[in-house]
Length: 460
Image 1 (tube, helix red, strand yellow):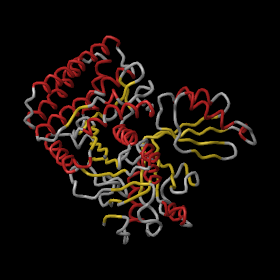
Image 2 (cartoon, helix red, strand yellow):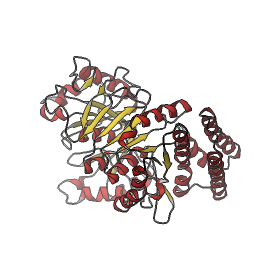
Image 3 (tube, rainbow, N blue to C red):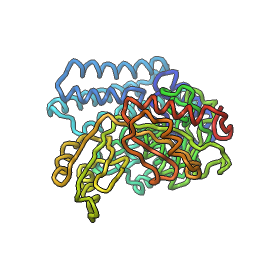
């Protein structure tokens, strides 16, 4: 049994859905469990719809509802899906969307709970369309509402899964369908809390849904299908010659995901690591490519000659620097700082300290004013915006002396605000200005990947 997740671009059109169906058919004997994202771009439209309803922009609400409706109707027409039941599901879902907009408009505000309910509709529609098309081409498929399986807490917008209870549901509701020879199709990104309210796992959470369900069901592997050939050595929008990585460890992939690599959601790998389930990253538009395998052990052991596997970056960050002479030899000072960040549910990416100051990067600035106010009670606080983290990752970095020197010699003309090495043996991270990202990533990639590359590690 395998879990297969298809992203928004993979189900973004009638032709894309046809390709997905062929991929599923090619793996039918392996008993696939399918998790789908919304049709590409629809979640963004639903989020915009909620905001428009909250501000009372009725014309934009109508325009967005019409767009969402017509996009799905166009796809089912092009797939020649004539089922009255599917049309009823689409009509009912659009009615639900309109009703939610009325509630939001009356409240002149969109709560996180209502935003989750609204933004979950895209996955619901995509899953039903995919089931209907699979059935039409004689691949038995069954829709399973993931809200009947995946239980979470009530942290709307970034819900935390309740693994044990969810696993019991998964075994009871999904395994019988697989044993009957049908393909279960579920929504990614979505769950429900103890009060049966719809929750979401956060943007990009469909990957997380796939590995969660895979771990609960004990699958042999999880496949993440998107619009890239696998995990690459850099963002191809910056480095057009970026190479595909054939295999990498869980640790390497987790570092890349955390520090901005868009091919994986940061939480994706934890369930797979826990159950030691390999994760593959494939391109649904080019399924003949062998993708990237992510597993506990590097297939190449330590024989590969590469030092750096990939370069990731994370933009639009804020650097907060706290300075106080009270830090000098003070017990518990750092704890008092991080207690404030914890109070406002704001996570910190990088930390750099000196005798009397500490600098931190955050990407969530919703409560930045409150955090600054509380920190200012006992320290001087400086806030700098429009920063970015650049991260180089590779298992061989820990065995290569002089890496920081070789990196920063290349960047002598670039202001470096923070540097982090040592917290992880396999990455070096540093903070620069947002507008230097393209130059830095391009320069580093040219240095580390322009020569002869190990064909066992990279597709060259």
